[in-house]
Length: 375
Image 1 (spheres, rainbow, N blue to C red):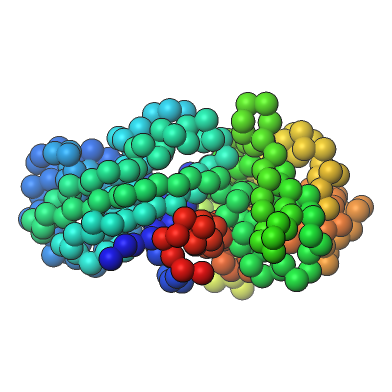
Image 2: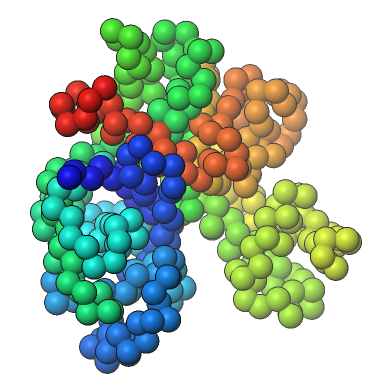
């Protein structure tokens, strides 16, 4: 029986779902190679990890690894770009961990087909990515189970395609047959702006992504996690007494998010009162704003596009700067976009998974064209 899996590799975390299903599995990016002593300890404590889906520990190709939250917390984050990120020694382990989350423990799967959404800067490495993820995965988990996954085919598309397809799934009745859109994706560590022409051919939506001369979108290496961390650092520097008992601040992201939403008001006493930390807020958000506007200028501030589509978890966290068309005000100094037609790729509460859900739709249509699924 074939299995069809959509992987959104992202930059701060990966998301995956099986075609035809709604559950999205999120696994934070982080890969740490373990010593044999650490592997032995993990095996001896296997029962405590039986239901853990935020971190996977396993051995593949005789290399014991830890993938997910605990690896990321130890500082083993994904490299931001470049060929090393797409070699078998990184995303192959990430894909193995994602498949372990989806398929029952200790079972073999022989006919897996993958669709992979990658960051827009990865287009030059697309063949490396597909080569790294195909073939047989021989895995041993901490319970001693030997697992075999056989990936028969891999197709790749950039995240902007997934975001657009998710938008089309819920808004196609409102669109004309030809639209020029700008997809703004604010991720955890990398953000992008991609111009896409959307048109209908024989009743089906088609995407024509406008890459630049380097075969890539407009990309900048800063995301919402960088904003959070900058604000945490500013709070420690400027308001040390206020946050002394909240260290590390990364464990209190709800407070950081509220401070951004309220434009510099830090909640205390369970949100009943607030402390003005506007200088720390302005310093941290200002760095991202400068980078964002510099790159927005490269795509002519969206003036070539009839619509801006927002995707990625950072667009919801920074929603007061990326105003919807219903909130449009050309003179609002906080509105970075200043464009009359702006919308989310999905509902704000679901926007973190929009690229994965849209990618699954794209994959489903591709499987039908290839005769692997019935329409």
